[in-house]
Image (cartoon, rainbow, N blue to C red; front, side):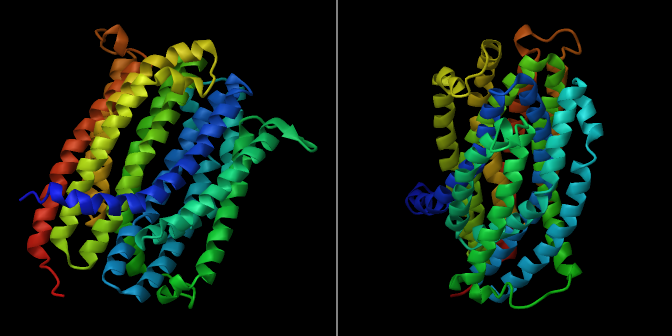
Amino acid sequence: MLHFKLSRLREDIPALLKLAGPLLIGQLAVIAFGVLDTAMTARYSADDLAALAMASAIFISIYVGLTGVISALAPIAGQLFGAKRFDEIGEEVRQAIWLALGLTILGCFVLMNADYLLAISRVNPEIEGKARLYLNILALGLPASMGMRVLMALHNAVSRPAVITVVQLLGLGLKLPLNLLFIYGGFGIEGMGGPGCAVATVIISWFWLIITLCFVLLDRFYKPFEIFNQFSKPDWHRIWTLLKLGAPIGFSYLIEVTSFTFMSLFIARLGTTALAGHQIVANMGTVIYMVPLSLSIATMTLVSQSIGAGKQERAEEIGWSSVFFTTLVCISIGIGVWVFRLELLDLYNPPAAVKVFSVPLFLFIAFYQIFDALQVTAAFILRAYRIAFWPMLIYAGSLWGVGLGGGYLLGFNVFGNTPEFLQGANGFWAGNSVSLGLAACLLLFLFRRTAARFEKTHPPVEV
């Protein structure tokens, strides 16, 4: 039975917005990093913008894959918080730190040996060299970024996202002056162009970690969790539990992001103008994506806490309320993006050729908002139920198979019968849109079946 009730929206939507509001502000603050990097590098040179597009696509693929594993802490700690088993939360955090340390070593190795990934785009050696330097610099900040992700998962689980938001806004305040200093130079420091963005990001990553750790150590709210009251050796059972849930989540993130990464690398073959235009539109799409993502994280928190409290039916009701509300919001955003596409593009102030190339791509980011909303909401609800393996397979088949594979066939007109409008970058974006629609249908079906089965096997807790 589908437990969605319109009457519940009055209760569920305010609860979602209370959590999603700070999350959205924080996510937009982080995304503003990318906007600033793109806009400021675009004014430096087209080559630096192309290098930024390549390097950032590779870094994000690695970063979200690794941090996706750590994000398993959020539903696990959320269920413990709902069950009021506070002392166990501290132990889960300590084991997540051990896991983050191991993943950091892996991530640094890949970032500093990314030549084989850079070679896919077949760009000139100067652009490739700038992209390589960018990745090497970011490796220095990865330990701080991974530690910060552990703390972010904790705060999401215990319904305190506003703490992270404040810290992220402080970092955003530092981003503009640091970018100016390291991209263009000043005070005796020579301008680095695109790689200067990476230097600024590394400084801010360590700033974030130090500030957040101080807050957790000093605020009384965290005392019941006993996070730093003792030292814990690696507990392989708990780490395996995190990995069992987190590895599919991380791989799902990796699939989702690499579908865009390889789009960028393949589109680079079409020339600098095509790659720069794609980077601008992809960046705009990422900004918009923060709305359903924030609502989905808030949904996961509320659903996992309800499950921990033994309120299985309530958990499903919250899930369907979020699906309805998030989709409605994203349809409105999609319409707005198309209507104001020229004004939005002017914010980046790209060269005329890049602007002409970019305009048709806005049709796709306006169109797929409904599918993006449905798939991300369903995926995060399933994570609250600790279901991640089947969503991973769904993402692999849809985003890699239908999206990237189909986009390649269309974009490069492999069979010689692709309509002209769907050739080039348009073909890749069309394939991605179809793949998101397929993923959304399958994930929603899986959510419905999971919730029904969960209510049968987990009877409500008597209060």
